[in-house]
Every structure is written in C-alpha cells, then in structure tokens.
Amino acid sequence: MSLGKFQEDPWRTSHPAYQNSALAMSPAPEYASSEVLLSSLYRHAGLEGSSERTVPQRGRDLDKDIQKHRDRRTKPDAATLDANAFHMLLHSVLESPKLPNQSSKRFVQVTPLVPQAAVFSGSARLSSNSWPAGALVRRMVWLGSPDAASAAATWGALFEALSVTDDDDIFARFLQAEIKAWSSDPDWSAVETADHPLLDPKDRVGLSYPAKHFVKDLHSIIAAKHSMTRRQWTSLLEAIVRLAAVAHVAWLCDVHANIWDCVKKSLEGAGPKDEEEARSLIFPRPFQFLSYGDRALPGIKDRTSAFLQARLGLNASLWALNGANEQFAPLSSAAAVSDLCGLLRGGTGKVNLVQLREVLADVSERETRTLLCKKGIGSNVMEFARHVLGQRQAANPVLRGYDQGFVLRKRGTSTSSPWVVGLGPVAVLALVHCSLAEASGPRSVRRLSQHLAGYGASVDHRDIATNDLGHQLRILGLVLDSPDAESGMLLVPPFPTRVKDAA
Image (tube, rainbow, N blue to C red):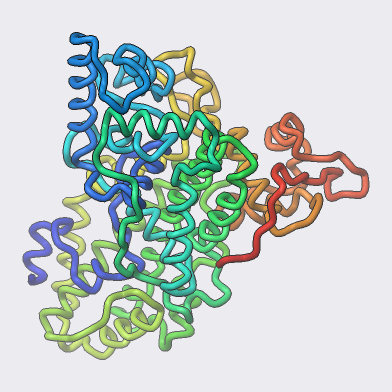
C-alpha cells in the first residue's frame, strides 16, 4: 500500500508495523457493558465454538425451543425444571436489566453467573458482528505479565476460577447443570491459547501500568472466591475487569500520543536519540485519567482524540517510509520507536516531507468528525468507556440499583447530568480487598489511594474521610476510625485471604 492509498481511506488498513505492535489497541473497543466483558471472557476462556457472532442467534433459538416445550408441555430429559419454570428463570430471576433504548426489544439477556449462560447471552450487539471484548481482557493478561509462562499460568488460574466446581454454592451448580440441559453446546473446557504479545522486558522494569496491576489483582480476586457465593465473586471480578479494561485503553491512548510526538519531532530533525530517551518519553509516569468526584468523559475524549491523531500520523509516516523500501520492526517497544525515529531523521532524503505534511493536513481536515469522537473509532471508544465504567441505566426504574460495581455515576437525576467518578459499593469492596491482599491486618486509607493510582484514578487520601468514598467505606464496615491513623481511618480486610505478588 502506498501513501496515496492511505490518503484515500486512512482508517481502512494500518501499516503492519503499527497493526502488529504489542502496543496496538487490539481488538478495537466498541460498545460493551461490564456484563458483556464478563460473558465474552467466559467464551474466550472455555467455550470454544461459541463466538460473539453466534450468541444472538443461539439466544433466539433457545427462546423458540423453550416455547415449543411449553406448547407441548415437555422438557429435555436432563432438565429439572419444566419449560414454564425455566422461562421464568431466564426472563425474571436471572434477567439483566435492559437499557432505555432496548425496552421494546425482545432478546435473552441474563446475568453471566455461570459459564453456560454466556453461550446465548452477553454479546455486545444483537447482530452477528459483535466485537470480541474478552480478547481485550486476554491481551491485558499477557501485556501485564513478565513472560509467556506467567501469562499462561494466570490465564489457566482464571479458567479454573470461572469453572463451576463442587466448591461453588448449590445454586451455581444447579444453574450450570440446568442451562446445560436446555442449551447443550458447547461444553465448558479450557480453550487453547496461542502466544500473545508481551511488553518488552526492558520497558516493563519499574513501569507502573494498568495491565500489570490487573494481573496482580486478578490473583487476589481468584484467591477470595472461597469466601463468598458465586454471585458475590463474579460481581467482584466484574468490577475489577471493567476498571482495568478502560484504564488499559486510556493508557494505550497516552502511549500512542507520546510515540507520535517522538516521531513528529524526528521528522523535524529532533526526537529521541537513543532507546533510553525514547523510553522516558513514551511511557507515562505517572499515568492518570480519572480524578475522584470530577467529570470523567471530557478527559477520556481528549485522550481518544490524541490517539486518533497519533494513529493517522504514525501510519502516514510508516507508509511514506515503506515507499522508500525501508525495513523496520513492529512498534512494540522503546527500542523499535527509537529505530524508527533514527530512520526518519536519517532518511529525510528518501521521504518527501512536504508530501507527508500535505497528506496529514488533508486527512485531518476530512476526518475532523472522527478525530472529535463524533463518529467512527473515536465514538466507539467513548461508548466503550461510558458503558463499561458507568452505572447501568435500566429501562425499568425498579432495577436502577442493579449495578453496584460502577466507577462512574450520574451527578443528578437528569439524563443530561454529567458522569462523575464515584465508586459503587461492589467496586469499593473489590479495590479494598486487592489493596490489602498482601497485608496482614488493617492499613491506612492511603493504601487504597495508591492502589487506585495504579489504574490512573486519583483521590487524595486526606479527602477520603469527608467525601462519599469515606462514607461508602464506613457503611460497608471497611474502616476503623482511629486518631493514630492517616486521616483517622484504617482499612479493614473484607475477606480472609492473602496472596503473593504474581506480577
């Protein structure tokens, strides 16, 4: 592909060095809810043959099958419930609230309490072209692990925890068996995973980033499974996954913007001169994209816009170099970026800088709405962040309290009220547990503040005593007020577990 072809359709085909990067935003995020993330995670971990595109049709087929059994007053041989009871189970007991714009639509949407429910429920769209949200979580596990063996071990531990075993509560075991009787394929078994990209070990040293914290917290959540019911545990897992997934995407936006800044300066004859300088410029230290109590979406929008501009600039530069027959590795590390910058500085005779600037100016002008996140990729990323982090807005007002693992809440009751950073009770429980997983006994609330900072969320520990987070901690019984503690508050471990650092 040439620079001219890129100019005609800049979003269609990325350069291989960009597309195959370990730092690529892959899969590209689109609309998803927290339950879609968890359902897709089930499918990627242990439901081979149940892809995202098959889920809506399987749900429709299951509904038709149940109706046939209701008409004939029969049930599958292995089922315990009759057709009427199973219909009520799916459409009342387990039903997940629909969004206001879905109130008139008929489809199966249940809480992803057990793996078998993800066979027919929990796709991002009701059509057959849903994006694989679970693949994003799987990629985070590999990027957050020091090596492939450690990543595979973490993924295996997650599969075991997601499985319904004799250690799960009786309702979870009944539910898995009953759904299996009505929707038999596929079986729950570990899916073989190929090697996925890893962060360069040199770049990882001393670097704090969301995927690394996620892997560590994943082990903490897995270790707590025996302390609660299946529903409680999946809620904690869902809360950590939703915060980590959006933080990871926001971190990648910053990394891409920083890489483009290095490349842009190199086109002007400057930029990083070596690998160490490139590393210090590319990876954000510290990373922050949320501030407790403040509006969240404007900052995410700015980051997304910077990412899109970086994507255009990097691909244009790579295609321009490609026309000069230069060879380069994927932009997966500071070393690769440093090499690219060196090529651009030394190859100014091979790259027509005037043409490159004209192409970028033309494309940026034509794609203004996309760059402003009003359509296309930018709009998709914003939808992803808003629906994954935000509290579920149920069509049925009676179910408005269904989602308690949120990170963003509405400041008021109006539909136009802004989304502000505020943790739900389940998210608070999950984060307190993870922050104290390696501690024995109470610790200062500063530890929670530091743990949130690992996901790019900023909260001053001195404000916790007086803000709504401190109120949540007191209601949940997660703090002891002590005049000797920081801000007069000590965090109390919610569950009796202790794990070692697996990251």
